[in-house]
Length: 289
Image 1 (cartoon, rainbow, N blue to C red):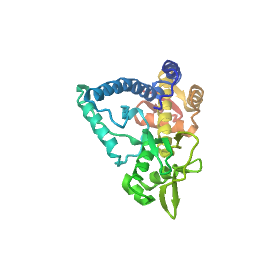
Image 2: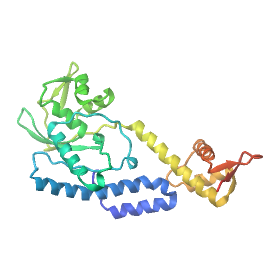
Image 3: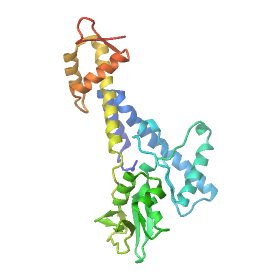
Image 4: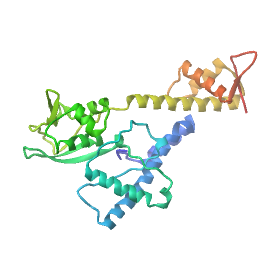
């Protein structure tokens, strides 16, 4: 997403090796992400040409990446209140996207949690900076174009955030190394004494989706174990559980599944009629063709 890859071919080579060693269940999402980003370059080029044709170049440089929802991590959804200039760009892109025949049946949803922005800021001191921030941080900063000071509750209300998301994003703008926002008696305002030796100032982006990411990792590992179990049992037809467990642990390269996870995935595959246990020996696992 940050376009820091030095070689897409090298990355695809790594994914190909992962697919051979771990199966498609592990690599499907990664390949989907890479395809999204490659297709997104063509989409961005067409949209840039569209804006030039309309003569719509304005003060906002607007770039959109179209991502397939099932390939990417899940994030909390907020009906975010974005600046009017950004909202105008969003509406223009949505109209352009829907005008393409291939997209008529597709639903376009905006994922602000993955967005970034560079904000040109001029402080009351006269100092000018390019602030490298997330989309959430950008929207919070924009509020201070219209309000001298705001409480955390007022910021959350304007943005449409929950308390946790609002608190983490506001705090990220008040860190000692980049204290652009100051707080006094629970009220936040622009730090007029803010100074930096660098014209471009990068602000830390808070980790908002730790729980969602943990859930995604668990889900991906479950799929990987499922694929390995089916692959082994399809070849062996029958195996004692302990032998199967040892083979799965040996086979998995990216992580070592514990006994609890393997038991859980075997039980899941039994429920879904991929496997069954012997009627006379519950430790004997049988593959169902």
